[in-house]
Image (cartoon, rainbow, N blue to C red):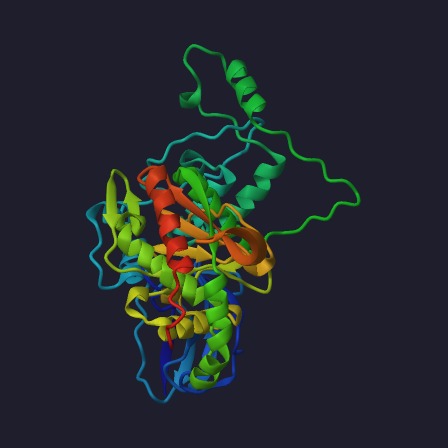
Amino acid sequence: MGKFLLKLPSMGESVTEATLTAWLKEVGDSIAADDSVVEVATDKVDSDVPSEVAGTLIEKRFSVNDVIQVGEVIAVIDSEEVVEEEEVPLTPANEATQAIEDEAIPQEIMDIVSAPITPQKPIDIPAKKTVVAQENSTRYYSPLVKNIAKAEGISMQELDQLQGTGDQQRVTKKDILAYVEQRKTKVVSPPPSALDQTQTPDQNSSKVSMSTPPPTAVQGEDQIIEMTRMGKLISEHMTHSKNTSVHVQSFIEADVTNLWEWREKIKDSFYQREGEKLTFTPIFISAIIHALKAFPLLNSEVRGDQIIQKRNINIGMATALGDGNLIVPVIKNADHLNMVGLAKAVNDLSQRARLNQLQPAEVQEGTYTVTNIGNFGSITGTPIINQPQVGILALGVIRKMPAVIETPNGDFVGIRRKIILSHSYDHRIINGAMGGQFAKAVADYLEQWDTSITL
């Protein structure tokens, strides 16, 4: 019998690591081919890692909540289907190679990850604190460590002083979290280079203390709730979006009475024929696709001083999960699908999202996002752009409203079904005229719905 090395597979573009969330098998358990052995979570989605061979689990390499790099060995399986595998230890340089596999590695990345690491001494944390915006470092840090440091306001200079416990003294998730706990009771004094040459350290310290909000007192009856892993990621993603894009909103009201009546007329026959519910979401997505073709700049992203206008229309649809969190599965090439195809894609992705069965690739590469806040009774809202996109449309609840109806014989007041569309867009490249015209194009498409369409 030989040993099969179960490694963390590639989890999609830009994903270099995952957190182990649960073991599904124990040492000594028998494993069939394609049995899931372990659950892992990335900043995109949770998924299982199956075994490619049948055998017996004889070794676990990681514990729950450990961070694993793509290509690292998670477990060892004793199997008659393989010969002895030779394990090649991952260095920081070939970790990066494993993480992106066949893609070319930019030289500047290789310069960073292959640079020698100088062991650092443990640091004593003095009495005062500041954040130094210095990003130059030759030391390798995983994306997770960098994200935690950014969220906690830890400068690169502070990070470089940390004593790591990982391979070649690399800073691990446990190291950075332990340091964060230390900083809650002690604070770091600013290095001499951070002080204004014309001021004394006391003057600088007073400026820092004035700009830093005091800690909030926790009373005896207060409840402290630890944010979930996904909650922390959503918080960071939303903060990053607000700090990156210049958010502007345009609102428009659409009369969807004819559309409502058309759907009521065909939804039962559609379900009997296709075995799928016809919700309003695929209908609204078809209107968005129509508007994106008329205003293709909304199907873009900004990279520095460049605008990348996307050829494919990949629609992300924000989906609420049972635990209160949010995920955005993506319908790839949505403009190639008819209404039946859109309905099936919407139902499939939303159902598997709530069952935590999405694959990493199914939450990536979105070019524009729609969120249906009307599901929760909201009339309208101001959604936050899903980076790196430049627009997102929120759909309010459809309500019966009194409205003035114009006819050749005069105006009268009638009951109509209306919805408010809220369009958030990035004012760095989308001006108010285009943002408003896009929302109007969606509204016009819905108001002028052809009720003679048969599906």
